[in-house]
Length: 268
Ligand code: ADP
Ligand code: MG
Image 1 (cartoon, protein in one colour):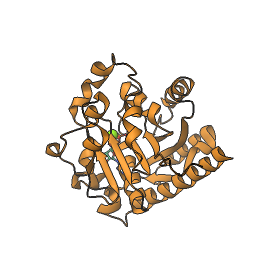
Image 2 (image 1 turned 90 degrees about the vertical axis):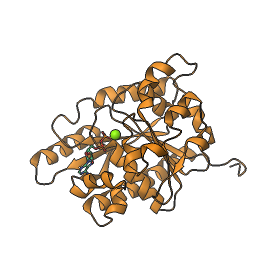
Image 3 (image 1 turned 60 degrees about the vertical axis):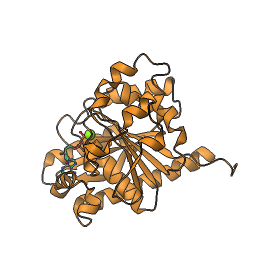
């Protein structure tokens, strides 16, 4: 090992082309949990809706440079990164500008590697989380090309697995072209309701179909999780003792264990 080379961060794209499945919630709370474990974390908001930015308490006035600037090259990583009130967590915010990125950036050279190139300066961080929009377009492809792995939240509801094969097909295509080492970090069942047989059925189906890809940790539906974004805080800080917080801390530990195992296998 060459000790002069800075360790590069582990980059995770949190993605599912369905909206409302828990991507942003997972990005914010995994970031907060990693921060509590002592990591330096960068969350990049890649959704024009800017929910991750709002959920971390960064209002529109504070979004001078955004992930759009990062992709378009009009600001570098240090310029577009802002601190947050969450220990260890920095953010590249998003605004509606990003809506036009698909159109405006689609003719640029290396249009799928814009984010990967912008993240060359990210050695200060231990983990970079990419909060993807609900589409498999240019932004999500940039995230998959830049990432070491994808984490896929799946809402424990009817037809949860629908659309997953298209997502996994996209991962395969990215592997065959721009990013051969892209891993599936794991599939995360979210908003599970233990009172519903349906949630149990979805979980059983997911585990039967996808096996080890599914995280052992399941995120329960929890009112405190849904309240926290309007306070500009991760639930881990808004209500550390809630069931949602406990689950996201468990996810963090499971993610770190999987990551360590994958790194050991890569070294062997
Ligand atoms: P996505 O980013 O995939 O669109 P979000 O993370 O924004 O999904 O979640 C969609 C909605 O569901 C949000 O209002 C969020 O607060 C809520 N939500 C997410 N996870 C939970 C949970 N575990 N319990 C209750 N509400 C949740
Ligand atoms: Mg979102």
